[in-house]
Structures are given as C-alpha cells and as structure tokens.
Image 1 (cartoon, helix red, strand yellow):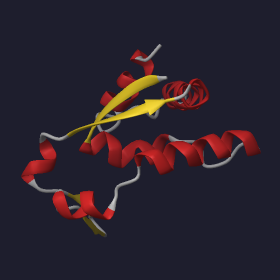
Image 2 (cartoon, rainbow, N blue to C red; image 1 turned 90 degrees about the horizontal axis):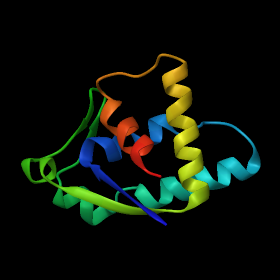
Image 3 (cartoon, rainbow, N blue to C red; image 1 turned 90 degrees about the vertical axis):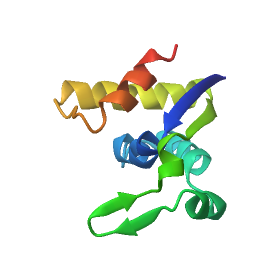
Image 4 (cartoon, rainbow, N blue to C red; image 1 turned 45 degrees about the vertical axis):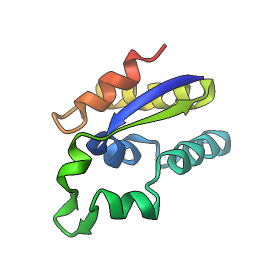
Length: 107
C-alpha cells in the first residue's frame, strides 16, 4: 500500500481525472478510489465546503488541511494510467498539475 497525500483542492478534483468509462474491473477500482476519498458530512461542515454553480468553496481551515489515503497497487495503476492519459492528451492545467505530479511520484 502506498500513501497519497492530498490537499483540499486536489481531493476535490481527483474525481475529475478518474476514467468515466472503461472495463468493469477498472470501474470497480475507480469506485473504490472515489469512496475512499469522498468527503464525509463532518468534513463538509468542518471545512465549510460549499457547492455552487461557480464551483466548490472552502474555509481557511481547509487551506492548510492535508489528507492521507492508502492506495492499493491496483488503485495506483488506475491513477497512474489516468495521469498519463491526461498528459498525452495535453489536458494538464495549473488546476490539476500538483495532483498529477503527486500521482506520478508514487512508486
């Protein structure tokens, strides 16, 4: 098991980089990652998460928060494939760059 450390922004956008379709096995792994990293109602309250048409907002406390998740080898494989595909398709932005770098840095 590897440990993936994410800040609040990276945690919010993680679902954006995951494959939206694929094999049944891949989608089971994607679901596992999503469940592991989704926000609890307690976290939503503690970090003042708001979901609006303009996007997702959070409070000052959330800006310094760091979250650590254990990632299995199969989950890591899906994450690395997703990061690689985004790079190959030239879809890397300043918005997702730090997340992609963290994923690629896991070995």
